[in-house]
Image 1 (cartoon, rainbow, N blue to C red):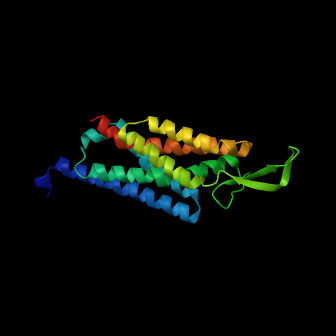
Image 2 (tube, helix red, strand yellow; image 1 turned 90 degrees about the vertical axis):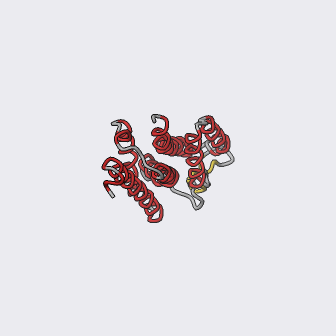
Image 3 (cartoon, rainbow, N blue to C red; image 1 turned 60 degrees about the horizontal axis):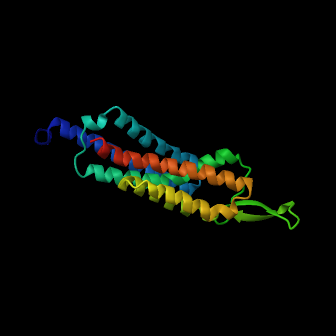
Length: 205
């Protein structure tokens, strides 16, 4: 087998198979983190992304050229990690930022104090804002990865504009503004990093 493929080809298959398994393991751990509601577990996903960036920077891709169909499989795994893994990662960062001061709602949003008719702030009546944030996050990361993959970065700007306009009426509370800004930045940055790992080997080839 080694004589037929050549030592370098065999080593490339081993390296790329290991990369695929590593990324898929990170996706599985992210799913587990979501199911168990333990977002800190999903920080494992930082390892394959960080090592991928390091591998490109050190030129390991040139040392072990990818045999088919490994590049496509790794790209799909990275896309899944971007979309799924971004959820618990964003939740973990938001939890660190809020420090337990924000209560979650029943529909994926947060509970904020409801202003009274006189403009005062009620301490008992609350309303849920930023509902559906989980699914919006999945869709925005899908859009970011897709935009990077096809090279149309204006899609990212369109996503930000649509999200901002759609949430504008809910951003009167400071908690909502903070969660919106931090969540969007973390989610999109994560998707952009994973998307860059998908296209950089192609661009630099």
